[in-house]
Length: 482
Image (cartoon, rainbow, N blue to C red; front, side, top):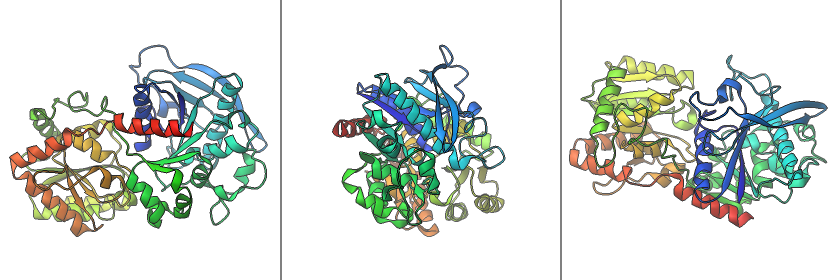
């Protein structure tokens, strides 16, 4: 069986969030099950450059073609690299992608943002169709998020997709937060015949890519069973598409993401000053000492960390209050790594001013520091308001850093309350400062009992959160749709 993944991101070549981690790991684990998986993503210039130390020849051009948007024709090329352990196809479309960035340009905006994902999909269909005409085509096309949401319609309705109409499309919703909304002209601009069907239109008659992906795909997956239920029942989660997800409930499946244990493993992580594992945590103490020196914090205190975007869905409205309350009522220190809403950054700066040097702030995207934080911290705070799956809590569990999470989405499916003998973290139900601070207080109390804390760490570190199980579930989906 062959599967072609089409996505906006693929770690480590271009990453803005968890989508990249999923797309960069799943093909490797599918290969372990005998499934040939490749990835097609845009070439963002320096934002999707291969690592300097990549062995083997540089990516070679394997295809040249053209795509049409409205009455304009653009040329593109596809370059292939096998560096990640699977075929990575970089779609070089200079009119729409380049060194400006993935989602945000160097000046904070992208002038061609409204049409660049339309261009990506139009070029992807041309490339797929060329292969199909040559007798080389995948058994499954696996499209990811709104950036590829119109692909199923293009393959089903467009003239260029005619050779691929019997190839099933699996469409994965990683987040309903962003939906890819265009005016109705986008439909004709892609060369699609007739009027846009209801399956791709929102109540305002605009083209909604996420809705279209769910409506036209043979199977729809999302990244946790609880998030699949929330998409059908919580308007604040589905963002207006709850009826769409209700209508596809019989072909909607929730599969929890895994983590790539070749990258996220404290026993072999090159970013850490010392390795460690569940049997010997001495290296974790060394990681904490080095991290606290780096952040100018006292290593003798419990260390709480937050790693992620400072946005509404990640719980930014209660994050400063939880940290303020906890630092005032305990002897803990804390560190925050992330960027986002400037108002949240200002609120955290205010907390830091009153924390007496116990709150370190790093408003940046820093992959290496993130690894060191997972390893050196005692507790991970994850107060997400909405969390489709979440990877941070899985990384934390693997690194012996028990998570404190809000009960939503995939956090419900992966974190269970520690009762002194069983569980792997701490969970709060109400989305409030009081509830979040209360869960942190329970975690700090458990940490004051060393033997119990080591048992909790061991519980999380010995769980299997790799892609092995999840890849098997995707294989089952693929075999069902073919």
